[in-house]
Length: 101
View 1 (spheres, rainbow, N blue to C red):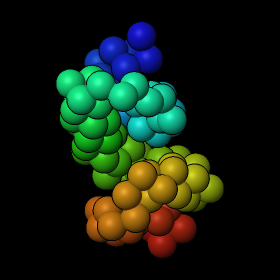
View 2: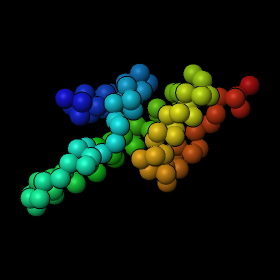
View 3: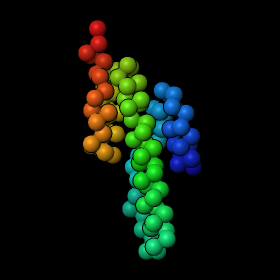
View 4: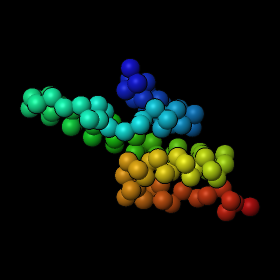
């Protein structure tokens, strides 16, 4: 059920929905769950990649929204997203609210 809700929120692309989606995504689908069956493992790998990409697609908008709220919130969101993929340039480039006049 969390996956369905996550997908729904991620596709809305509103600031509130992106924040909720980022909160729901806590890592790879069924992390640590192993079934030694090739078709299932192939499906699981594909689903993990698809969901991770969806989470990363939300990241720039989510971080920018958080940066408008508070610096601490933006930093926490960015750290969570960079844990998923440290090479997310868009997350590294989110302007911090303290640099605004």
